[in-house]
Image (cartoon, rainbow, N blue to C red; front, side, top):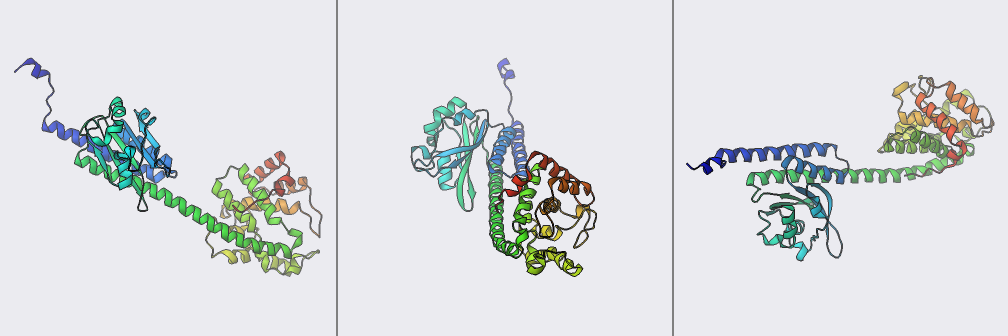
Length: 402
């Protein structure tokens, strides 16, 4: 045996099998990590960026990127996510999804036909001719391209490059196909979720616009409180922003405040507009309006707990409110915000049986009952807000149904 032969590594069938097993295991690992990313995914581009990162990190590919087709004259394909060590390759990349010189490569064909494209050797495959020099400069040896499908339409492709020729075995391609199937499913899930959310918001918008008619009717029957719900919504929104609540919760607060007194449509106008003190019986009638409002819209599905807000807006932290004597956290946070805004707006507005209270008198009321009738965090936030901003400016702001 020659000494030179001793220095050469011996690649046996066992070595090849182990290498193949390692690659398949890393593909399975990538599949697992992508599925975990899918569970947390809310934004399509961020999800695709994470997918590219996982593919490159777990599979040691030099580049992975996702391209989306543009509806323009050139039928261009643009990168929307990318990861790897050779991302400069994409800087001057020209690709089309049309049947032209720049669209007859793996990416264009995959998007146009919906079929996977495997290039085992970019130096010899004619489909790669326009990009061969750039690929060679980056050290690419082969690539695999998968179309991405949504609602029976191919909306893009994912491209994976390798620095080794003939790198994609049948087993590995099968796993990568499964991986891409999960990626497409993830995008479908994100898009469906967004479409559903926008549909729900659109429906809620239409329904609440309808309810505005009823709100207008309530305020026409009680001219002394006209604009009360709008002003309460303005202050409730300002408090919610000051508390740094999530955007969706703030939307629920605005919607709830806009219609919180809608149950008063069932209260006789002569009681609502009475300039003198109400009798105990009339007061009991007034106290039915939260339940009446709840019953009016409880069968309508909103993305927010509007009916519950209406029902609870006269509940108090210590259980002394109505109609059900709820206590503490039994009352929704949205309601607790609206309650403070409702009290502040009502006290600072003129009524036929009393003049408007001053700001100091109003703040004294919510401060003295903090933790008893009103949520302490909401009260503290309201006081802090009104030290920084003019109450009348806040109340005068128009809150549109969004």
